[in-house]
Amino acid sequence: MLNTRRLGRTNFEATEVGLGGIPLIRASVPKAEKIVHRALDLGINYIDTARAYGNSEAKIGRVMRRRRDECFLATKTAAGTKKKALEDLETSLKELQTDYVDLWQMHDVSTRARFDQVMKRGGVLEAARRARREGKCKYIGVTGHNIPLLMELIATDYFDTVLCVYNLAIDDTADELMPLADEHDVGVIVMKPLSGGIFFRLTKGRTKITPEAAWNYVLMNERIDVALAGARWIKDIEQAVRCSRHFKPLTARQIEKYTTAARALGEDVCRNCRYCDNCPEGIPVPQIMQLFDHARAFPYEWPKHRAAYQAIENKADLCQECGACEKACPFNLPIMQRLKQAHQRFSQPL
Ligand code: SF4
Ligand code: SF4
Image (cartoon, rainbow, N blue to C red):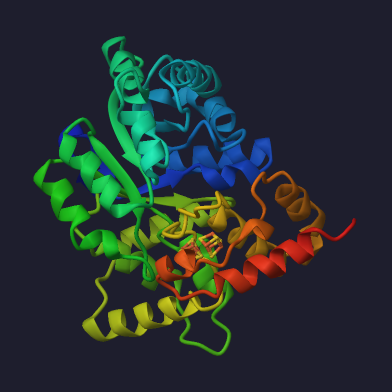
């Protein structure tokens, strides 16, 4: 039996470790199916995906057609209008091979413009409320990276759950957001508990952060109801379950050691916290920063990164060097310099 926690007002007893669907995009269809089966076999009862995660929904759906009643199934829409959101939901249900999802989340409400798309009269939230009346979703949630906006949304009491970032390097949702969610009985789900594995890839010459340490840090926060384990391989989900079973709270000294080491990694890589995602020139700063880091880590995938960069409408050369993004970055990354490097690099001919 895995440890469970009550998911806020949904009253669902969720396993504290859930399956996160993003990395399934990169798994082959048979491998993805095995991962989902393995998660359910191990007792995980919470699965999260999104319309925006490529074929993740379709891969999960291949398992859901036989095992739907074994989990609380959550997906998301990033649609900007009520009509498009309802179309998204129909597609999600078809891909997931089910006639309802337990949780339908408003995906990535991290900017005021996106907030308005969701909350305005006739907006995406109305689509969600209609879907709930029609029994196509049981609960409505919100996800994002902008803490003040998420807190505003929690306070409206329209949302049953909130999905935010929490790990050894980024834990500022614990200060005010999680207590507010508690107050409103909103379930708290967290993403990126291992920061996409960056903690383990880039620890050369530094304090070694183990998966156990990273998981223990997340699981010791009792305000978190579910932490999503992104799994590209079966071993990823097995590791998360093992860490839940053998949970041991970190000591104050360990917390200091590991959080210091994890935060220092921010000097090297973008953590995709998206606090900088408000460029007056419309440059998608986090997206370019991530592409740049991926290209550094996986140089052989350069053509793919170049193509992704070329598809961006507002490229880095629009930067006016106003400095707003660097001011917003909690990790003091040299964003302007990296944007220049990214533009140079990704503009080279193939
Ligand atoms: S420094 Fe450049 S990229 Fe950053 S916010 Fe200003 S214009 Fe945008
Ligand atoms: S550049 Fe800094 S603020 Fe922007 S997403 Fe990356 S870590 Fe966050």
